[in-house]
Length: 258
Image (tube, rainbow, N blue to C red; front, side):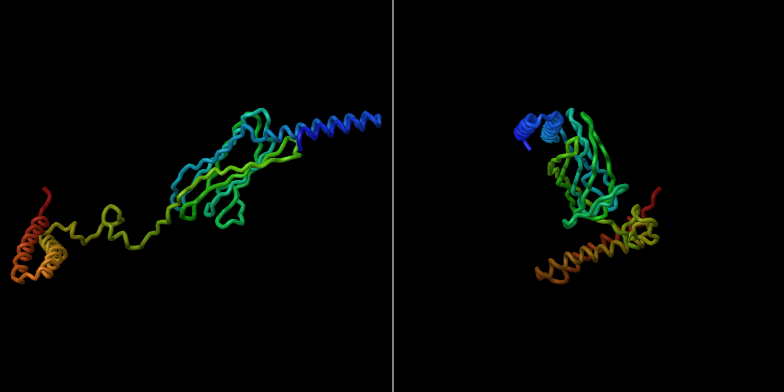
């Protein structure tokens, strides 16, 4: 409805009232015209100077962790918002804490629906907490705002993209017995028979032989096989490495703190 149409309807009502000599019809025509003009004017300025913000407390959340979502609505004009309905699309895998979410037909989406009232020159803030129970990259939005005039006659919609994303990390599972391979301090109990915690020469010699067999022998064997060198040369080169690593292992293993 436009103001021009309201004016023509008002003139027609006044003309009819003059023909019928009806004062009540004049009053009713003027009242209806004034109400219609107020509704049209209010509807045009419903979302003027109105801002909406959605803020996430974190961008990366652990599996099972909580996320705080803050909503802020600012009405910086004299005309109040008697009612405004907020419809925000949230991803699946968020468990609300103390409020409810509505399921949607879209795959993996759910709706946050809230109706609020904002007075003139007022900023309304509300915080909501959710628990993240599904890993992956999740997106928020779009937001649909719906508000009506103070008389509840007509309404108006507004769509905001307001994109936002959060990353939920995978769930960390505990593997029984795996901590024994990690060593101190990540394990609950230290390993009693560890080469690194038994300062004896015999342990050091065994460690040197193991390192010699696992690193030196495999490295030299690969090179000498392709170069087709005599076995005597291989034995000499591997032998002095074996003696050297045995001596180093014995010294380090027998070393004691003063």
